[in-house]
Length: 322
Ligand code: NAD
Ligand code: UDP
Image (cartoon, rainbow, N blue to C red; front, side, top):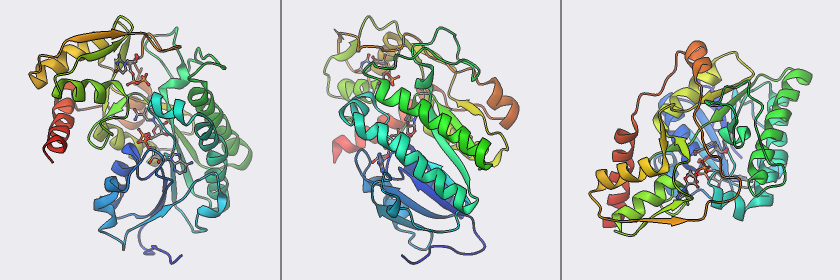
């Protein structure tokens, strides 16, 4: 493969580039003038998310391939390696359970090996799910979590915990410059309307005047971060010199009942609520403590839930009209 490298600009490798987070990151890196190689197997992502990037072949090259295969990763002098690939929505990672464990284990190893070989700085997108069903609230990075190692979410949360441990070992043993971000629930345009996460489900159901599906009694809480705030944070973490995990999330906390009411209000929908069983091991509460990110990066989220929901709502309404 020919190099996309322009010698004056940094070269980034982005795994999971066709997904929700990866594609927004690619757009931002293009704005910053990076040369980018993006790899994705399109298991949960789509080339439609890359249509802006693909219009700039001098900066961005897409490779369709699976990261558990080392030969897929071009041998180039990467400055930055962003390891984003992994299913993230609970229905996705449960459907793709073994693949999820392999991308977070073998895939992470393959990306770390490339970082070690090339002296690249490496960033892992981990997750708030490493805290499991937390007994500490809000969750600080120093909390070790409460995870069921054999439950239905284990394919995701345990494999992300493994990915974090492997990343720290490459840092300790081989002095790879590594970064770990624990991302809390993030939403925004380019999420698949049918990806099964609560925000997409509620918006689609409200727009279609169908009942909003509340799992359990709806008192469980989550804290929702808008995608632009996350991308700002990822760039700052990569630029920092901090190798231990950093939480990135929006500490505004809502119960699922409150979220449903806000979605109904913003859409003007007259949908009712329908109560369904709570999935097993569903965390009862989740809220990031972002003191570390504020201190280290001077970062904090800017977009409120209502503003962010209006943005995603507009894109979903446009999709409906097509
Ligand atoms: P997504 O499903 O939209 O994107 C993941 C991308 O990775 C997809 O394009 C998929 O096709 C690709 N992929 C999966 N397995 C692959 C493999 N073996 N080889 C190559 N490509 C592969 O998910 P997302 O919401 O964009 O999440 C991205 C990252 O952020 C994940 O690592 C996830 O764990 C993390 N994260 C996301 C959230 C969130 O709320 N979105 C929260 C916590 C953590
Ligand atoms: N949830 C819900 N209705 C839905 C989808 C999800 O009540 O249609 C709940 C789910 O049980 C969880 C919360 O909303 O308590 C957030 O779920 P999501 O899948 O978005 O993310 P999670 O934090 O579980 O990874």
